[in-house]
Amino acid sequence: MQLRHLSRHTQVESFALCALESRTFAQFREKGDLLMSSSAVLGQFLWHELLTADPAAGAGFYSKVLGWSAQPWEGNADYTMLSHGKVPVGGARVVGKDALASKAGPNWLTYVGVPNIEAALAAVKDKGGQVIHPVTGVGSDGGRYAVIADPQGAAIGVYEPGAGMSGGSADSASAPVVWHELTAEDPVAALQFYKDIFGWEVVGTHPMGGDVGTYYLFGKGTTQMGGAFVRGKHLAPSWPRWLVYLAVPSVTAAVEAAKAAGGQVLNGPHQVPGGNWIAQVIDSHGVPVALHGPKEAAAAAPKAPAKPKQKVKAKTVVKSKVKAKAKTKSGKKAKKKAAPQRKAKTKVRAKARKAPRRGK
Image 1 (cartoon, rainbow, N blue to C red):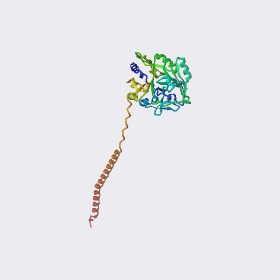
Image 2: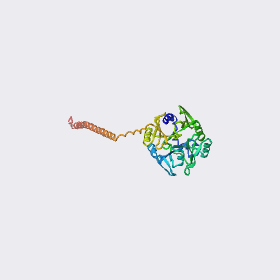
Image 3: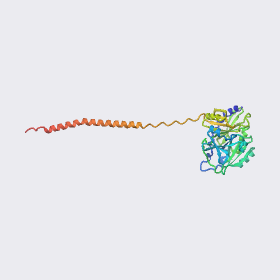
Image 4: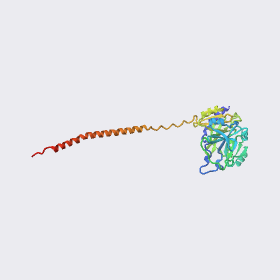
């Protein structure tokens, strides 16, 4: 039943896949250093955490599928940083060792920016939500976060960046989540709640029919940031209400890597409007996640043609020498031909001088 539902709803996913989360902190810095605690951060997806039962904090599976590495965070050895090369792409918490992970359960947890976390949490409670993890500071100036549950039970993080935080890299490797998707019993009510907390608006709809109904696109202004639709009754309670889509260079390769790493393919790969492909998998420790990208990796750019060898110049030199020699020879022949004429004239003059005088 899950597969039937997934294959239906994923057909609409990329009708809205135009707002990649590569819009990271860098977009808030047009000139100078704009503080991240300003209102510009409201409603932006800022951070992601893997909550997992994997004692290695996802290092094995996500290393094989996405090329990430995992290492303890210098600020807290119990917290794991996930990186692509030297660039952080997210964090990881281990269920059973971390209080937040144990409360929320295995899942990908998304954090959304707010300018004032106290005001945001007050609005959450006023609109029927709950605070499931209290306000917690990050380092000396890394901001503060909390985790809430919306009135229908979806868990999501709230993050107030520190005053000293600034823009970061804006490539797909440092911001790998390209889409966020919410399932709710009443998506209209859920999106109204998030509008009150994060300022999100419904920016478009796509009728799907059946038990999916309408697919709602939400965002800010004209920018689409995610989608929402009716949560099917046949979905297991453990299926996340918020599903993240991770960018990969080749969906085909990523799916094969996921299977080799102990994951399970739920749906796909299949093509979606726009030309890209998607697949939904469960990682090696039971956390659902979606993959998005081209079917195959882009072909390497053709090599530049080799430069002509210097032999061509040598031929030119030889030709020029041959021409020079030819000119010299022809010049010498011309001189030889002209020489007899000079000698003939000399003899005539000599004979003329020796002729006897007449009349004596």
